[in-house]
Image 1 (cartoon, rainbow, N blue to C red):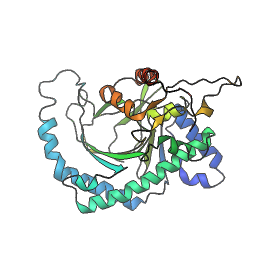
Image 2: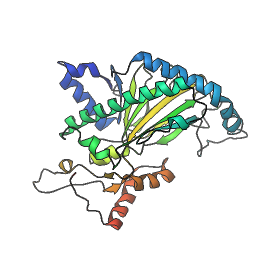
Image 3: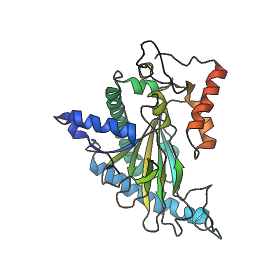
Image 4: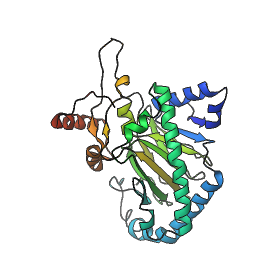
Length: 320
C-alpha cells in the first residue's frame, strides 16, 4: 500500500514546488485525502482550540452523551448497529452568516479563538482550491467562483468528540460516507486515531499528526472536475481507549450555487466533442437528496441529479 500523502506547504515556495504539486495531484486523483503541514495556521492557536474543545466537551457534553447514547445504544445488542454513530457533536456556521453567538454553553474565550481559527481555515481552503486550479489548468479562482452562490460559499464546522467505546465491533464512531460538499479541512486528535478512508477496496488509516490539517474532497469537487478528482468513502472507528477530538470545517457551495463540470475538463481528444460525465444541478437540491442517503454509495445520487437536471430543463453544458 502506498504511503499516505503528506504535503509540506513550505516546499511550494522553492525548488521542490513542481514535485509537491505532483504529490497534490496524485492525492486528489487516487486518494481523495491528504495531510498538510506548515500550512500557516499558528501551532499555539491550534493548541488552544484543542484545549478549549476538550474542556467544553467535558463540561457541557460528556454527561449528556452518557445519558443519551452510552447508557442505551449497546444495551442488549448482539449485532452491529447500523443506524447511529458513537459520537458527540455540535455545529457552528460561519458563512454566509455566523451562529457562533447563538450556541449555548460556549465560553467567550472559546468563541474568540474559534473565530480566529476558522478565518485561517477559510484562507487556507481558498489557497488549496487555487493549487487545484493550477494542477487542473483552470484559471486562478475558478473553483472558489464555482462554489459561490449569490451570497458566497457556505462555511461551517462540525465539532466532534468520540468517547471510549466498550464494544467498538458493534458500532462505528461515524459510519462510512462521502462528504456532500466542496473542500473539508480537518483538525484531528494527534494521539487517538480512528479516521479511515477506503482505497483500492481496503480501509486505510489517516495518520494522526500533531498540528496537521487533513484535507478531503467532497462530492461537488468530483462533479466540477468531471471525475478527475474523487470524493472517497471514509469512516471513524470507535476506540476502547481515549477520547478522539475532531474539528471538521466544510467549505461548501452556497445553497443556490449551480454545480456542473468545468467545460475545459469535459473536452475529449477528439476536437469538438465533449464528455460530460456528471450532471448540472443546484447544490440545495443535492443536499435535500443527500440528507436521506448520506451513508449509501454516491453514484446513485449523481444519477438521480441527472433526472433533476432533465426535469428543470438545465442545459448540461454551460460556462461560468
